[in-house]
Length: 294
Image (cartoon, rainbow, N blue to C red):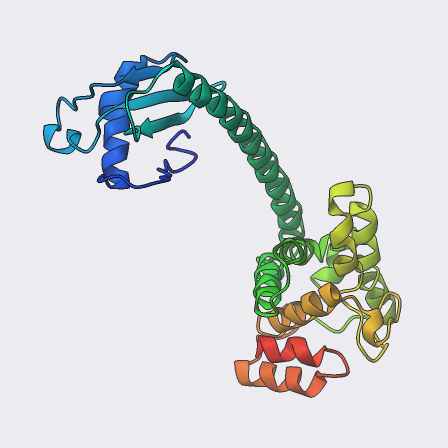
């Protein structure tokens, strides 16, 4: 991989008296010039490492095949055939494996680029919410990180942890439809203003509802203000009707809100935040999730 994007890595199968760093040195100083920047296979049955004869004793013979996509992805090496010399059969086998590896690595990089693009767009979306209310700057990112840590602590599967992270990141995206005069109001909200704020979970779910790849995060966004006692919004769900994702994100959201400065109050001391969370376990918050947070 280009050093600016990915770290070069050496993967070894089998045993040889060379460290990964020494194999990297062998590849860059000796074998790369032999390949000459093209896609041909190099076979060397009487190998001598010209500038490191001390290490060259560890390599008797080798086959080297470049992994060439639109750019060089690395190389595949076979060192020290167990019996005899490397031959045309070995070359064809190595070339076949290298071709398959190149396709896999190229597709993997394309997928990684798409993932980076998606995450960049999602972070940009959340930044638009933070820009509306400087007092909540960084809130979405913190909720996402806390939610992810909670999901990891609860030993949820990796894919579900990622979905919870994304839902935490996007949980307030619906506030883009709430007037700034309401979001940034320093005093108590009127009932009408509070009703406007309460629309943001459903609005967020609607905004993201057309993106098929985000189907699994919608529940966490829509339900993160639901409560176990049924007094939450927008649907008034009760008990187990509240998805686990929403219970995790809802607790992370409240924890960060209470421990951060807001337009209408200063951040609460950590002891007060913990006390409030303990008091609301079983009514507003899932007691099991509370245990993991504390």
